[in-house]
Length: 349
Image (tube, rainbow, N blue to C red):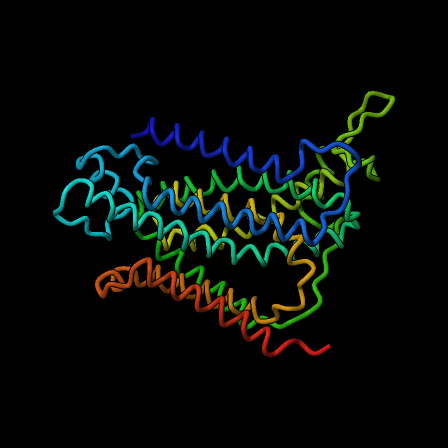
């Protein structure tokens, strides 16, 4: 089972990397340019389509992820990651179909939660770029490497969280309480103009302490070597680290949220990758539509509170049959209502 999971993980990573290279325009030549609204919309849609195709793959071939090939191997995986479902007493293929249906629903629900919470990242990234005075032509390059760094850090975070949940069941209640607190804080917080002083940011302070930081950008390069031989990091590299660090702060909320949906670390990772990889395109798409979703932050607060309550009451909800499909319906409802209210009651200028 371990060998199959490792092989699938490697193949999945290579496939995502290949699509990402096309998305990022690695094979293009010429000077860097700003990402157009049309291009951002296309790639935002492309990543959503890829996530839906992966959902279909899991629905009909999800057993390949864990190397399931007979009833005993299926029961081992089910005991590890999906104790809440009943496989029934049918044939191996019947039981596998039940497991794969649940697996695919967990993926698409987790993806929707992660992708929705990514909207908050977009607004903070805009604040970071404005505070650091980054030119728009460098946005794409910074987000490329920032997102890659975020994926690596999330990978560590996810499998560490899965290991803790396997060993200490009570942690799920800690996660749940934290999400409810965070959700309520988002709902009741007052609107205000946020500020960020680059020199006071903890990442900037740490990098300035241990590295030589050049005072200006050099044609979008991350490093520059002076005639004296001394190597400097540039402000653009500093912003990349700030972006990755900021994403991990957001992951403190979003990863516990998805663990309320699935205990399978591979499903959690897959849904995170698709959400985070679509984040770069979503940034350029939503940055042009910021004013249209005034109630979305409140909707995200309600969403976090819901998944937190689901974690705290998971035993009771399982007994009354409130499963993954019901969670998906509630999450879609919360997001639909918040977006609809934003459209019906736009913010007055």
